[in-house]
Image 1 (tube, rainbow, N blue to C red):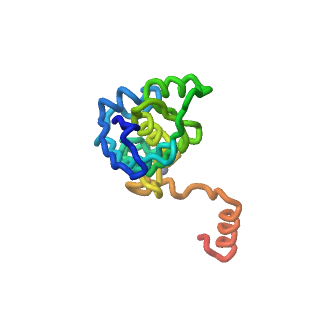
Image 2 (cartoon, rainbow, N blue to C red):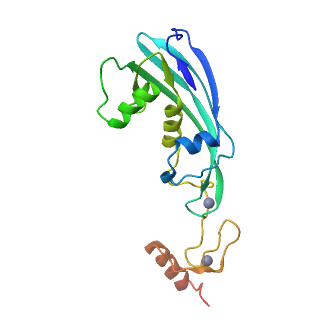
Image 3 (tube, protein in one colour):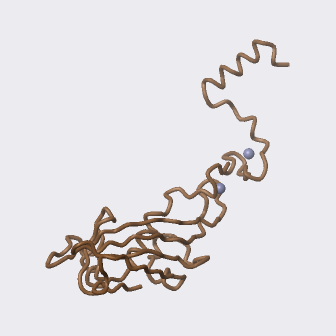
Length: 192
Ligand SMILES: [Zn+2]
Ligand SMILES: [Zn+2]
């Protein structure tokens, strides 16, 4: 999706586009270890406007990826819904210090700084691909979970504790408090 900078005014212009599996495979490096198929295209909706010399982009990216749960190892659909806001300054004659950013400025008419919310643009058109990829990269969880309270696999027998409790529940007490509690129940005649 390309945005014509020349046509932007102080009044926000809406934009919307979708990017599917072929785009994903072409742009997301395989070494990131992410799935190569998208269950649905990523959808980006937003608005763009000029603020003085700056270009402001704000919107939201939605989509999903099949990830592997870090606890139970099941594959699940991880939903992304990420609002974003970027302020791009005209690059002018400046050259980004990083070669990657410098190449992006030539290729996309846009480069992002480390803080993501700030960047530079150059020329009359900006390509929003890299924004989309960056939003996805930042949104991906370090430790994906199929759900917040995933019980995970039993470290002893490997059973999926989301499905059924295994026979390993009588594990040795782990904390000193549990040891104390066990002693107390013995001293009060709890043991047979
Ligand atoms: Zn899980
Ligand atoms: Zn077990």
